[in-house]
Image 1: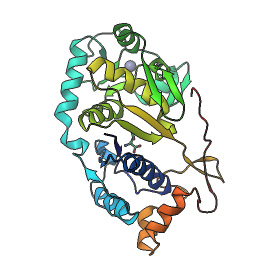
Image 2 (image 1 turned 30 degrees about the vertical axis):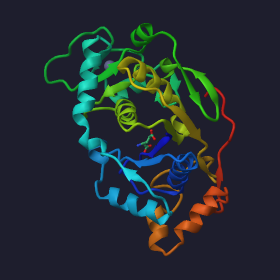
Image 3 (image 1 turned 135 degrees about the vertical axis):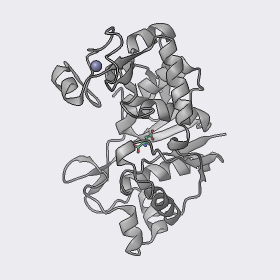
Image 4 (image 1 turned 60 degrees about the horizontal axis):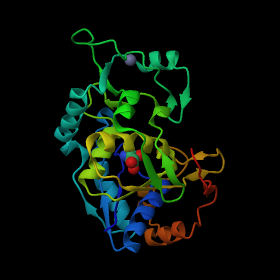
Length: 283
Ligand code: GLU
Ligand code: ZN
């Protein structure tokens, strides 16, 4: 049984790139007679706007999609805490007090997601009481525990997991129960997601997710990292709050959502928008 999901964060309205992502997930499940899930990823504290979840549902319905909705991330905090406790007890997490600015100033490399944390706090022990800490995964120690890992992308083929390229990622954020990496990996396992579809911008994150699956004894799904819609004027991906009307704007303006979905499925994009590179090796 193929199970896919669309997992938007309610921190801004959905745009055409999200519609494309939802259609990919929906159609891959439907073609296989499987299930398509909606999961609201609402643990982005300050930026989360709960009222957007209702907008997202209306957007998906307008596109003509059918889905089953699973619990939002805000309902799963105890699961995230339990997993973090387990990794901490195994000595695989360490507390980090660094600020964003300190990390930017001390990083020696830039990875796929910005400055790579150089491990400043690894081995430093407990910080003074009251100092806010994030908990980072000691990736080298974790990999030594698991041994080499592989994963498969439907478009890019088999990959050797290389989580070190993202550095010692944060799994528990300062004042937040979990990071995206920990929450999404646990949720996909809990929801029985067998095919994780998402944009190619998250390709590198999958190396980390594969490591977390090995550490936590979670099932290993397949992945399908689809190309992104690109704004031809800037050459960058479409983003919330930038360069294209939201799906809700289009819906309220009376546009036909089923026709838009058909156009996106046929790769007929509005003027100024194109599909990013199809081929993708080793990024
Ligand atoms: N909540 C994430 C986003 O909006 C989803 C990432 C994923 O699909 O794994 O980008
Ligand atoms: Zn640090």
